[in-house]
Image (cartoon, rainbow, N blue to C red):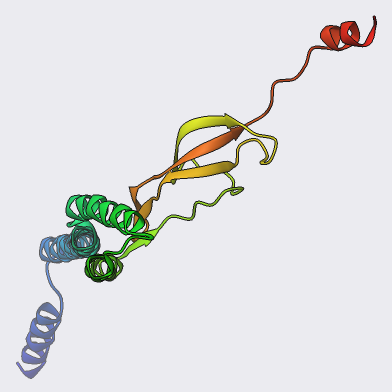
Length: 199
């Protein structure tokens, strides 16, 4: 009887230590499914993080462009007004030239004060003269040719005279300098030169 009990206990112990083949297979499939789901979620999380980084970069670029645009608006919002002020400054300059040698010294002094105030206002707003002097090369970016003059004193393509000064608003042309440009003298044809040389 004791031997039978021991045999029965041994059989029960062996049965408790092992699982049926079907249960192990189901457990293995469940683990594989969990691994696959975890891998998919990891890929999804990585893709979401990449989208987040791109969205953040786009937002920073948008902020930067907005700041730059606001700065441009701030710097050039008075462009049309300052262009009109330049015309007034030109007229004041002409008035000062008209007072040269006259007896109206008090009127001239008043005009000079207004003129200096206008120039000071323009300088504070970032307006500065465009370089334009006789003999200087003509630059179509900042100069406007109003007349071509045949000249032996200045090389071709250089400024001969300034008709109206030009100005920059910061780095932008507010008004081009209107100038006269030197043209090369016409070349005499060789035939004409030979005919003039022979009697």
